[in-house]
Length: 173
Image (cartoon, rainbow, N blue to C red; front, side, top):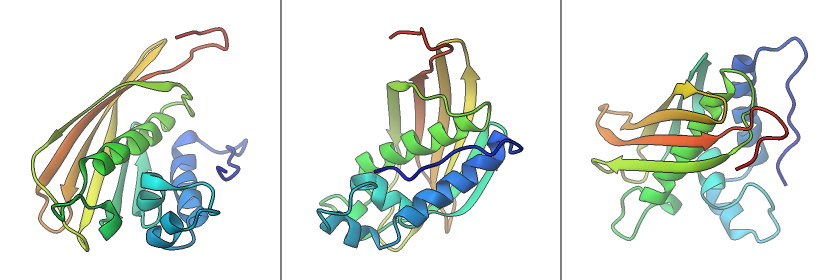
């Protein structure tokens, strides 16, 4: 179950994003490994629990979110490097958070998510993800993200995320 979250009346959406991300981290009050192994844990689970279990150094400004995610062994592929699906989940989650900073939760659904992979990271390394909003239209929003190895800034992946965002309750896919 997703933790309850709402914007305070006097709060800007930019200020909500770090609070929301910290709430997700708090909801994962155990290590990602413990959450993934516990069938009764509820939400967050899977890649989300792996990501939110260690998010730190959260920064948000209008149209931009930056944070650090430690790579754990559960995030690895069979070659011992950060799994591409986990990177794609990071791009999805943090570009959505960046969209929040420009006017509130867009709701909506992903219509396209593309990732270009360039290098790898291993367990015990930190990766930094920077997500930026490129455009918000009446029904589509586009954001991009870069994922870098924190210790040396090596570019691991770049992603682009397009979301359908309902401009009104009557909007349809």
